[in-house]
Length: 210
Image 1 (cartoon, rainbow, N blue to C red):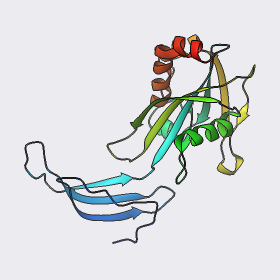
Image 2: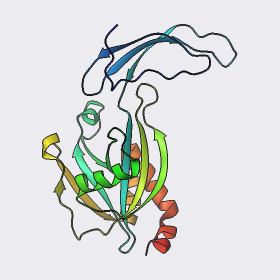
Image 3: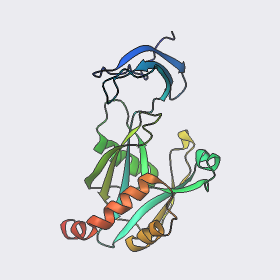
Image 4: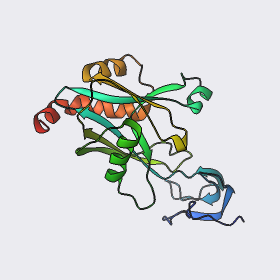
């Protein structure tokens, strides 16, 4: 069995779960665990033995910056190789997002990522929800926020040079963002969730945040 790095934690105990083997199959930036296990089925019987690969990415945040004074939003665009591999246009329209650092509060991470990826400051955050992204093979879970932000007149390029980021901000009237969502131009699930939420809560936020 491979030595376990600290960034690939053990599978937590759960009633009916029997972990028979747990090893690190690949130890890169994000390790992949190979887990051999059985679990108790809904009918009470023991499942057959299963072997799953588990991609360990951990916690993340995404933020939809919203300017209630001008009724505009900020989305970002960047090149995504996995999108191209999946047959999508590789320049994806997304929300500001990033991974949580060890012990970092999600709200603090949201503010940090907003500054790093969009060059913006948000002074108020409202939680949209906490969701799994790829529960069929990855442990990544994401905290979604809407952030009150005074947006500039035009977009710009941002991102951390040390991480090779090339991020372009896209400033849109909220209604145009909703139109892109309805027209199928938003292909990123996180951005779609945030935009659906904002459409439902926009009037309330404009009253509470201005």
